Length: 178
Image (cartoon, rainbow, N blue to C red; front, side):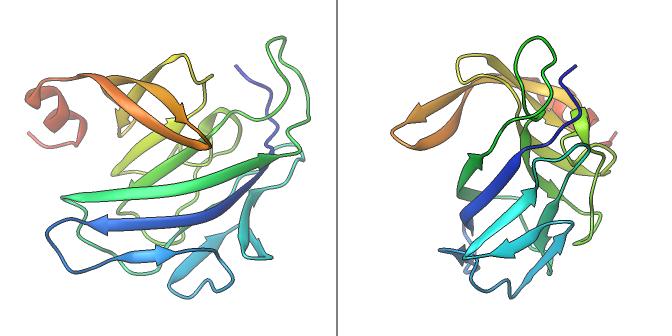
């Protein structure tokens, strides 16, 4: 388990495109947080800092309104700065970050440390960034693995190459449906 210390994480821009619909949510920066709810996160200079480099910190932000995400595309950029902290023998710094889609509500905030700010948020789908870029990653729904992938970096951008996806039955079970 990584040290329970979270780094300064700054989200610089985000775009969510629900495909087949007219809704486009775009923030080229976060000078305005209109339409967003920040939870233990701080907006400054056009960015949102999710967590400071102090022990046991976490933060989140979500759109204030709910959107149909049954078919969508998301693009976002993030910057990690001042990653110091307590070493767990592997590396110093935080446990990671996550892109979370959830129905709990705009004020949702999970546990810190290895919970990466989303653990405990029910009815959620998460893309977790908590391993080196060349490691195999798990694709989780409600904290159940439904696929595997590999983080990829192209220039300054990161993405997820899905290498294996679970059966339809496994994916539906992870959603809590019968």
